Image (tube, rainbow, N blue to C red; front, side, top):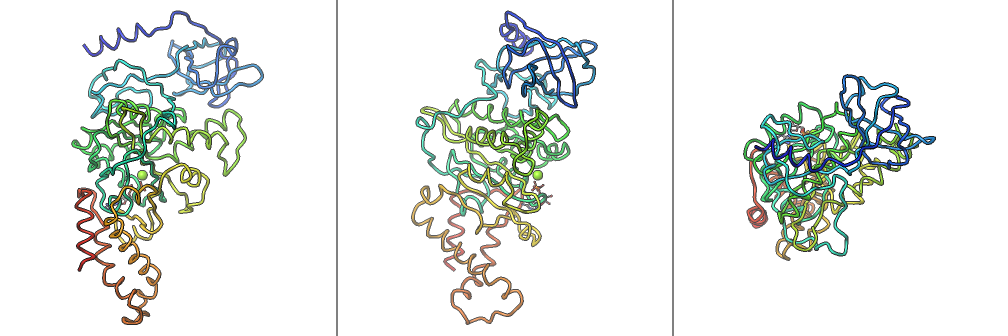
Length: 440
Ligand SMILES: Nc1ncnc2c1ncn2[C@@H]1O[C@H](COP(=O)(O)OP(=O)(O)O)[C@@H](O)[C@H]1O
Ligand SMILES: [Mg+2]
């Protein structure tokens, strides 16, 4: 039944006329085609009819000497000179449906979880959608419970806020995302796993997210072995699905792991198309695409819900000043920094509270809550300043009253900040707990 309805919809959407060209050259992942360049623009879709009538879907990534340059979504096996290239004359769209909750899809919007066909919805959602116009967007308002104590209290996130999670590899970015997906109070989570290892994607879905988490989520996956176009598109599709649930009036949590892999995919695509690199091999188009992607999260227009976005950023060599981190930090409304030293100490999630900030937090908290948090932050800062001396045993109690007090509260605050992967936490409880710790 679902298949039949999908088929009837597909027939309705078949274009009336068909233009086509021919492959004139293939170089690496780049296919040059002739005959149709005047009908194409960057971002358009084409299909190459390869040997044995296998269809290879491609996207236009540029033009050179009067020829269009395409990149394929799948391997180019069987593509040769003179192969027919059909131009798809509609922009790429998805037809999301409420029944997508609990499903895992690829960057083409096809199900990959073995749970049967995916029902198509009524309304098309362009993969390259634009954010709502800035003037019509609602303000970021009301707190959202992300299920992680340290973030709920010290880095409170508002509905429609966008935050980055920055860390080197293996410090716990993916784990933080999975805890959020599982414990959040948001109605829907849309999770994009972009360019990570296949094994990790599977573990994330089966172990970390689990049945309960998956029920409220849609997961979009493109693993590291897929083509750069697929990896980049997985990020766009994640946003398009989130936009669909936002338009239906939901508080949507959009989690993307990772934005760095999206940037790397864009770098691969643009370098192949001949764009000159600018900063650390990243091309200017990477820095143009990042804000376009990240701006799609945020508050919706009138009558819509909102998309709270959390995006992980891989910080190579723990250098937080590398170009992608810098660019992402400038676009978002705050950053959560995970620290390798804290992880090595065994405190998870390894959030460095003092280096992290939520820009909307002071405005969305009550004065009382802000006071509790700044008091705890002060203790952490004082302790951090003296940490070396304290550990060496070079600090003598009674030298400084502020330090003594910080030493007294430090273990309890650290314990408050740690949270096992399976342990849930809620917003109100967090403030209460912290207030009790500080009242002792
Ligand atoms: N809350 C936690 N409790 C215990 N261990 C954790 C927690 N979060 C992360 N870890 C540990 O950190 C390791 C790396 O985490 P992961 O999320 O895969 O890092 P990343 O995505 O940054 O590469 C995990 O294998 C796990 O052992
Ligand atoms: Mg990871």
